[in-house]
Image (cartoon, rainbow, N blue to C red; front, side, top):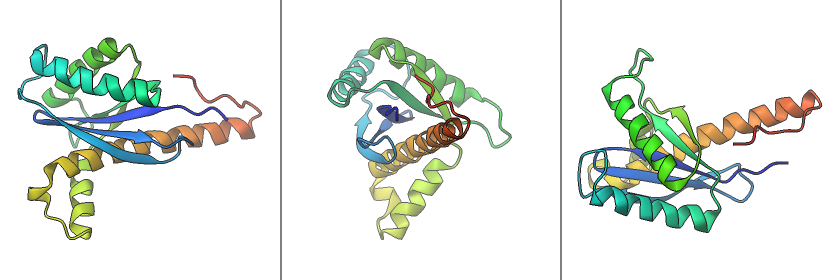
Length: 164
């Protein structure tokens, strides 16, 4: 079985939620939240700090792919925010020399907030946790998709999981 080490990212203006997968490549876990000192996307000293933080995780976890949550509109189209995230994702992928894959992240933040409420935690006081949990949901969706593809490939006699 091919195991892929991936980082899931929930890219926002103020913070980036980060999740990683376990050694089996089946379970996503929230790792950290990176705060931005600048609210704007693009090149800056703040971006350099974000890349350095991510690079440390990439090396430590032997990451092979970045999985980015893409905020489609409720109608399923790419809006302004999604295009900003794509631009940032391409930039991060290039800086980290990793391929980038996207996952539809609609409502992951809402789901993450609900998880906090279920744990009796205030979403307004734990915004970093919301971002981390959203990244976890994004990565888990991607991992589940790849596990399904792997199982389908086994049934057809093709044991390859698409290499990323």
